[in-house]
View: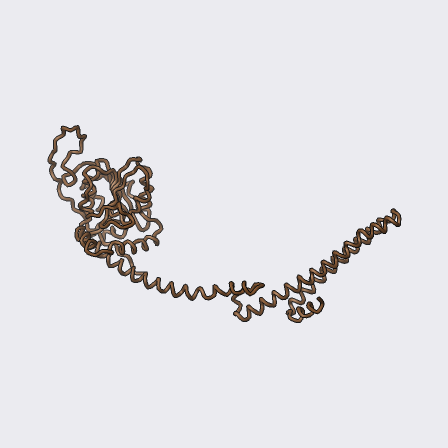
Length: 376
């Protein structure tokens, strides 16, 4: 055993040797203290008989000697083992440039070294992902520009004649949503939570139909409308937002969450007015930058003015501009206009006659800017 310790001492550094000597010194001090206590205890046995003293000394001394020997042995083994591990760790660190800690077994060393190659693979994968993201982002921006600069029927034709365009657009849109602090659809969902349980909702330009998914199996009925029915949301009604299959005066809430797209966006709002019940609510969320009022385009105030002329009442307290990116508003339908319905909106008792209403004067709708996503 002493020869093994000598071998370990030969491989130990000066610092490790000093530490080992300190440990030995501590153990010697503890042994000396224990011996001192034993001597004091022997002196206390003076009043007993010699036989009792001898028996007591034997009982006390014998296990103490064995314990000391065992402790010495364990201490030497412990110091030698620690020194061996430290020396091995120092050697491995020098070989690897100080980048890794070494463990006691070869298996653990292999596990420690394995992750070193992982970042290289990750970099290659991330580069591919970046290239794909650039291509996807470019495709998304091109489609986005087309949808904002065409009419509703032209957008519907584009999607119908080019399978995959709709899904490609919304794939890029989902990537954009990840960068937002809050999705306006979630804000709409929170607002709808305070509405009656039997509220009927029409989600114009629903996209992935997230609003319907959030509402789930509650008693609220949601009609999800968009240019195409995605495979993951077969309940979506594919149509032009200006010509939906919904009945007049049948909806409690009409939602436009970032979906006033197209040069004839006002036709979507007129369609929403047609299907909304009197006292029904039009909920709109849009990007603020589209309503800066520059170069003759719409401002939020001019847009609200047009909504009022179209038969909606907009309470200023219901216009939320706190968010940096988006604004949201609630507009209540006050009456049926010539553009929205041929009925007077009264209760149908089975004898009510149709009344031809005079069409109201055309509304002067302001031009909306296209929503452009910057190349990043």
